[in-house]
Length: 456
Image (cartoon, rainbow, N blue to C red; front, side, top):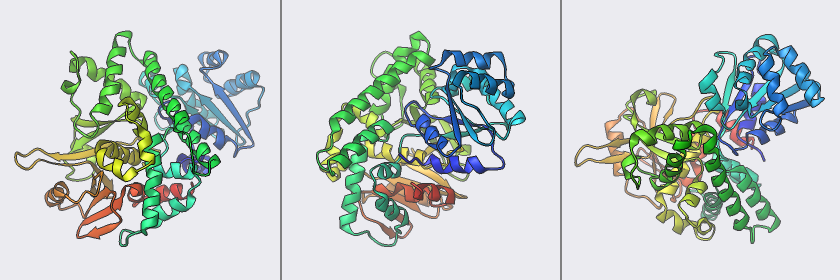
């Protein structure tokens, strides 16, 4: 299964400025798989899992000297580690925070050795020991994007068409509907790698016929249980009930400003807010922060107390809400009209996935609460020095009052983008893209993102 991050890992491998790499991402987004596949490009690959091999933990607790470390790892794995030829992969590094500090000394004393570390809860360990500044690089991973999903389905021609099609002409209706069929499938099973692999295998074996949603549903339900079980690993016992409440509340409040007061039950913000921070740190949830969007950078005008929330994956959100996601497979256009909050979450998930992995992605939205002039833009992004508003419509979406108001109040924004079930079009300063073409917009101003997508 090819991933967006593969392109950037290859660049890291050959970079003269290479540093030990710390790979961030929630559990089950594919970090270990991607590193193992990347390891096949080296003459040798050594993997050390600090969770599954207790003896390995003692190695980093006794010394931080790289030469002694690789000697001890060799004794444990019986695999030689040769700088310049070996990729050393330290998985679940959060089990021994001292190992994060050791990355600094690999950089300073053995820079020719390729070292990658990862862990599903690594950011909690970083809060304790920090990251050696200037001596360790980071990359971030998310669930599969729609383009990565198409690659897993063997639809490389569809990828090429989406990434190359211009805004100035409609795409043929037969392709338009075919691409929405693919998008419906993606919204049914989401971007978690195990679910995608299960669906893609079933799709190919049945010649796109009676592929099984049943097995994919079991995978997604198991993932939800796994995330809930993980609460015990990073929360105090008394916080677990609040984490469970928030995990469900996020999906119930998709598409609108998150309010603790809208959560059913006798809960207080002072109890819930620290637990939301835990979910954000674990990568299970993502904030969409309000910004005035008056200029770059967007974060400089952000109101951190006003935000919307997304769960890690759009299919998991639907399972939390007990939606029957199989309906996306049969008549996606009809379902799109009735699931606006899910469609908005999908676009947010796409924007996160297409961010440069070397920086932690942050989503923003805009709203005006002037009495009589309430308006909201679902997402705003920065392209070079321009601020571009993105409005998501679950159906045809012809009403664009909020978009026009935003452009009126933000003359520095050259145009706005609408995502909907409509075909491509451009009228005045409104660019309309089909919902399956988020990648085209996200990659518009960065050649590396384009090349990473085209390489899938």
